[in-house]
Amino acid sequence: MHILYIHQHFTTPEGAGGTRSYEFSKQLVKEGHNVTLLCGSHENGDSGLIGQFVRGVRRGVVESINIIEMEISYSSKDNFFKRSVIFFRFAWKSTFIALTMKYDLIFCTSTPLTVAIPGILSHWLRNKVFVFEVRDLWPELPKEMRVITNPFVLMILSSLEWISYRSADACIGLSPGIVEGIERKGVKPAKIEMIPNGSDIDLHQISPKRSVENFQRKNDVLQAVFTGAHGIANGLNAVIDTAVELQTRGRQDVKFNLIGNGMLKPELMERTRKEKLTNIEFNDPISKYNLVEELKTMDVGLMILADIPAFYYGTSPNKFFDYIASGLPILINYPGWLASLIEERECGIYVPPGDSAAFADAMEQFAENRDMLKVMGDNAYQLALTEFERGKLSKKFINLLMKTYQNEKNS
Image 1 (cartoon, rainbow, N blue to C red):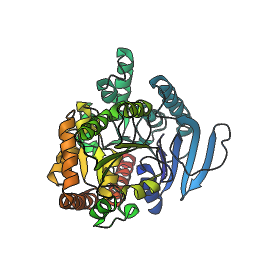
Image 2 (image 1 turned 120 degrees about the horizontal axis):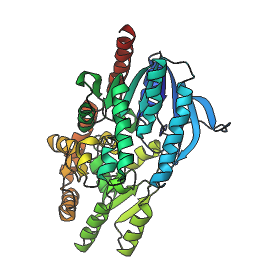
Image 3 (image 1 turned 45 degrees about the vertical axis):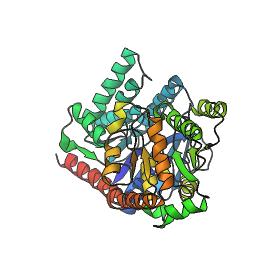
Image 4 (image 1 turned 120 degrees about the vertical axis):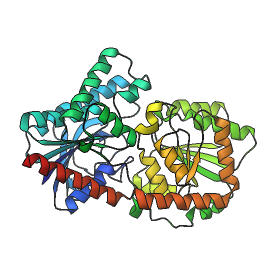
């Protein structure tokens, strides 16, 4: 079967960012399917292509995946208007390709929501089987964050959301809240599958004793890491608040390492400088391969988000699955499905949002109890291995595509 796979923010492990689409595409190819992956350019991504763009497009084959990359560059530092223009440009050009090339099934993965447009039109105009993957609920999240307040824009996005879900022959949600959000739009549960982000166990290749050994190698300084965007949604001022609290307490044995980029990074760095904090280090985004090596030198993974209820059950952050694949205990500062999972599997500590004292207490607890650090790290790795191993999730994904295609063609 030939699958047109559309993901605007695609990257291989040579770039920074989630590699779900890369791993799924590789598995599809391994099982004998033909995959054409359509993507845009990204500030920290790497499509694997090195040739020149010709009339705004470059094509090539990366690990047997046919890649079509459009010269439409996206940056998390861009303002909302510029990003919106980029999203619609990508959707427009993707639609032209989707309506003209030969394939059997079209698969679109958000965000942005506009990536569904070529799938919708291909389904309507060419009767193509369409599967839509929802990584974030739009416009619920930007509405709650007050990133989008214009009623007309919200109405348009809500209409596009409804049309996307109802046009798809099947939908994939990455978290329980996303699945429920799709159901609220009237989609039958039988047409929805939850397939969360996954852990690349083989890539991380950790030692079961790594957590404690690293802790000792770092001269008793607990190394906590956050990887990902530094934007409004990420709420990283919570880390700075905690760093201030720890420095006030005279704790010199905890250090925060923030790896990534985003609109608020300069502001966060300036606040760190003004507060004269010595326990925070900012680092540029790095490739997935380099990130794997960096995580081996860390002791705790930080799951930090702004205190917005829609996040509690409506996200499936890549960083969580990287942390547990590396055997890192987790500190999470928002409730929801991941917090419940972390507490249930005893692989980290949950602290209430906005409570820098509790956050600092948790970091002290990690720093003072190496045995706990080791046990939680082992539990985290077992969680990755038993529940979120990428190979198992890839098979679930492929089975859904095959079942949907056969059902639609036989109906």
